[in-house]
View (tube, rainbow, N blue to C red):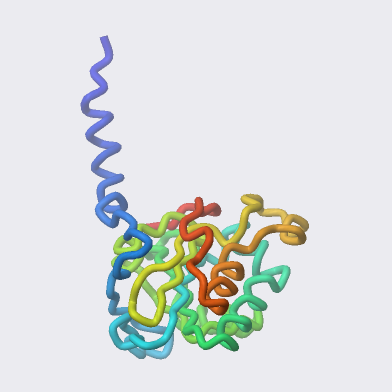
Length: 201
C-alpha cells in the first residue's frame, strides 16, 4: 500500500507560503503594504488614503497578460482610471529566477515599450504584497476606495482566455466597477474569479 502522507505533507509545504496570504474580503479594509517602485520610491496604502487605488498583478511573459497589453486593452484601462482619479499600481511578484522576474530597468523598459501608464510599478520579488492580497494570477485585479476599503477583487473581465479576439464583447469588471462607483452605486460584482498564469512566487 502506498503511503500518501509524505506526498501530502510535501505538497502542503510548498503551498503554505501562498496559502498564508489568504485573500482579503470585499467590504473590509484592504491590507496595507510597503512596496518599492522601479525608481526606489516607497509606496504604502496608508499613504494613499483619500485616493482610490487599483492594484494589477502582472508578468510580461504570461500569455494572458500579453493578451491585454498587446491589444492595448490594459493601457486604455490604466488611462481611464487615471482620468477618474485612481492611483494604478502594477505589481510584479515573480521571484528571482522565475518567469516574469525583472530588474527595475527592465520593468521601466517594458512600461515604455508597451506605452503603459501605471502610476508606478512595484517590485515584490519576495511576494510579501502578493501574499497579503492572496494574488493568484496575472492579471489579478483589486480596487480599493478612498477610505482603504476593498471594493473589488478578481478577474479583469469575463473571458478567461489568452485570445485577444475575446476582448471585444467581454464584460470588463474593472471598468464596470469604476462606473458603478462614479454613479454612487455599490459595485454590482465585487468579487469574480481571476484568470491567467499563476503568480510565480
